[in-house]
Length: 135
Image: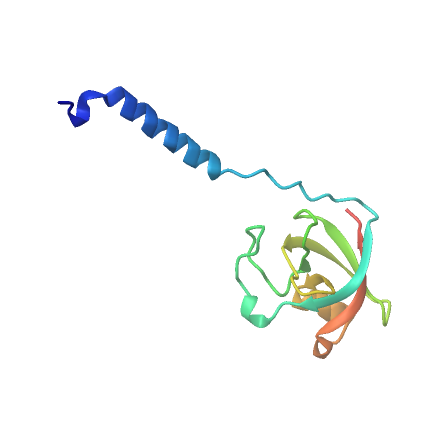
C-alpha cells in the first residue's frame, strides 16, 4: 500500500509547475509607451476639473491643484507641455500633462480650473480647442 508522502518530489515538481503556470497567466505585454511628438496637434473639446478633485492624486502621482496650469490627456507622456487654444476667441494657455483622461467622446483634454479660466468663461464648461505639443 502506497502512502500519501511516498512521492514528495513528484508532488513538489507538480506544485511548482502549477505555480509557474499561474504566474505566467498574471503577466501582460507592456503597452506601447506614449509618444511626445513636438508639433503634433489635435482638435476637439476641452473641459475642466470639478472642484471635488482639488488635492486628489493624479495618474502621475502629483496632487491636483486647480491653481496650476495642468491637464489630463489620454496618451501624451506626463510632463509634456501643450498649448491649448480656444477656437472661439484665439486665447491660449500652456499646460503640463499630469493626468489621464478625459474619457468622454469628443473631448481631447481636461484642463485645470485656472487654465480653463485663462481661455474661456468657466460658465461655458466645455469649449472647442486645438492642442499643440510644444515640449
